[in-house]
Image 1 (cartoon, rainbow, N blue to C red):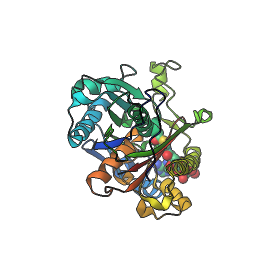
Image 2: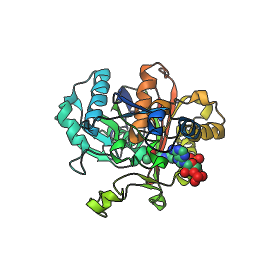
Image 3: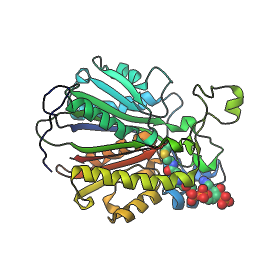
Image 4: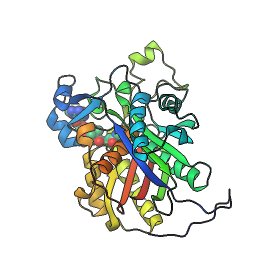
Length: 340
Ligand code: ACO
């Protein structure tokens, strides 16, 4: 799909195309299996596998922070991109589990990788954050504001998991994924992006404590207000609708049909959600990249890790059209189509 570049009102220069020139990911060493969880709460491998598709997840060490995982993923992406960290103009870290409320986790990453010329900020869009980051990066690069942007999705979800709640503790894991974006000649990378939100649903997936509305107190911690709260069934329903709509919007904008897509990289929350989308889009499940059986739901890191794995394993090849589609708390949703 070759389109003429439009003119940018900001710079009066033609808008630039944006490519992903490097990807990286990192997951912690420690594996917790469904069998391990069944010794902690009233659950079973059979229940978790049938309802979610998850078999195991990775858990970060106590002293391993979100920024540490983000840094490891970023360094791999930078190495693959063959750039110096000093060439990075902007670092975006999508996370719901920042090292601290402030400063931004992106600033910690900046220090650790030596990206001394970058501006840094975090993106709060829950599981959809990495693709929000791709859209923001694209806007800055196409408009000639920045040349090189590092986008990271990183989570230590197990730091906000209620390990006594079987409804949620079986779902989540830790990890990070990263991508370096830059204008690269005339080749097309990011073809279309779409982001959206619906604040009507702030109460179906959230962490009530830890912000200014409900600061951390001993009582609040005793009530587990510093952990993930979720109405699973409602999230499930909204997820399918949001991901379907977002997929259609990105395809429409790109002028592509779902049958042009070589690989769909969806949010890795639940295999049943992915199956429902495959069914509704009328494409085989094999067209989807799925790794949630190994990592569970790593929120903002999930598609970023999956993209890196698909890239490094040769699952996606130059010239392939790739659809990434996500949803998360907020609600938020996003989709991106890439020509690899
Ligand atoms: N083990 C055994 N039983 C369980 C477990 C468990 N781990 N968890 C719940 N159950 C029980 C429930 O208590 C309930 O029992 P009851 O009928 O006696 O009350 C029964 O299983 C059925 O529970 P449901 O909630 O109806 O199960 P459902 O089929 O909806 O599956 C699930 C639950 C997996 C959470 C599903 O709703 C889902 O995947 N929702 C979307 C979740 C999601 O994607 N969240 C993340 C999105 S964004 C982000 O990552 C931040």
